[in-house]
Length: 239
Image (cartoon, rainbow, N blue to C red; front, side, top):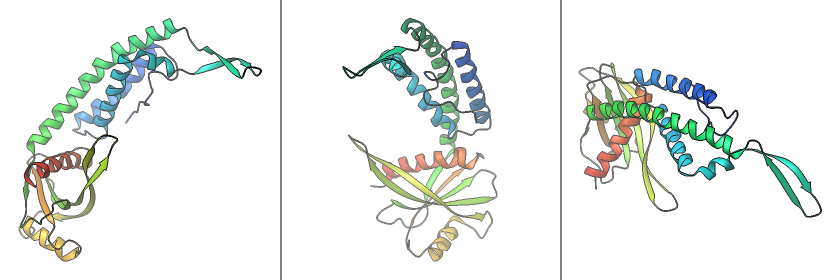
């Protein structure tokens, strides 16, 4: 995947045609992955760039501060350093504004495409628990049944809590455990029993099946959306 640096607008050559070339090449790469129904990390990357562009548009002074400056004169007597700007404010601000006006709607269109895929995948998912639920569902297993794939993929999960300056967030960490061939003897219940026998540290694990009739790329689409969907399911159904 072609990448754009975080500060792609304000670094390097400030020229609208050059920046268009960079952006369109990046978006072409994103579109290719979306055509293959691969959402991550491409969708998250798009969201980051979109938020950065909106922030720059809303705070033009922040744009100016992102440009490098050359030392013009060092006054050792008064301990002062004078700088000269690489470009005239009027010129580079005109270019930046033109780039923003071009880039924001282009990225918004691709975000909309990504969101449509995300919504389609999310709506196709079915989540249900297997067996008796423990008192806490913060640790357990996800059994992923991905359309026509011949295996049921098993991931261990753990709900984690992290804090920002103002609030707490919950997230799910996962690790791959094993895969079971889809056959008559490998029911979801028998898979859970086998997991309990093999992993004694979880004698009664919370176990959820997340299934879809469609088939999606596992790591780029199905797993990340399954994690988010399970997080919402736990918040809604598990006290």
